[in-house]
Length: 290
Ligand SMILES: [Zn+2]
Image 1: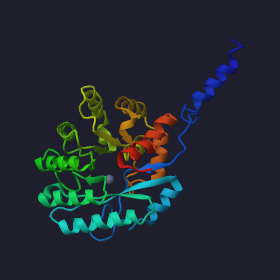
Image 2: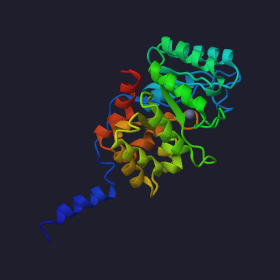
Image 3: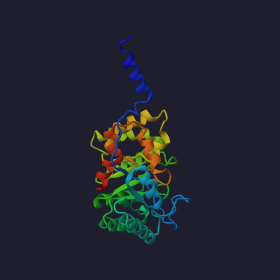
Image 4: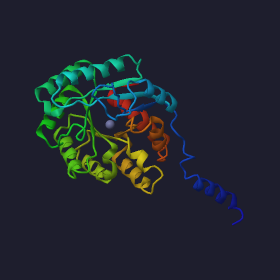
């Protein structure tokens, strides 16, 4: 008994630290795959969000985020404004010396104008667009969403969808169908269904049949919301079941700061290798970043 005492103490210290503090952390570059930009005229994501990229650059530098998405969201029936906003976000990214990559948007209910814009964006080197069922007020099962999703697949554009709409309880199933019907399109589901993340296990199950493997999730909002909670072991278990190669780091700036979001993901207790995949490698691979 006496002989094992130092071992017991060591285990106790490990236990007290929660394991997480002792885990080797990934120290390399970080990509924030979910941050919004506001230009200040009719594109408000959050009324008090700073205009332009200056504040985000500052926060990224503080947090150790090397590259970040810049997201805009298109309004319905304003194809000219949509084009102008997309051009602005592409220009902001181009002027950033690799600090930002543009995530423009179309409105899926804009018909041919949306498809035309997608073709234009692909030619400009865009790799991902954003669609938001709540902000843009569309239903994921609308055939028009399928048309846009199919076109994105043809053009090599990934789609970042907001995935949480608590007043549409079928939405997780609608995303599942969309992913299965358009296997050539890469779909990123932001927030991992948030408080309904348990549903995500279905994607792990279907991948055994070779279906819905074209889906990634980002951990924006959900990691910050659940950090330090009793839910963490189940969240991490679910992420591992799906595969950490299907997860991206995101802050959802200006909802959360990149630094807070990063701290939240690091607190979940992933291995350094898993962190590297989530915080950098998966996004780098998906969007052709360094
Ligand atoms: Zn967002």
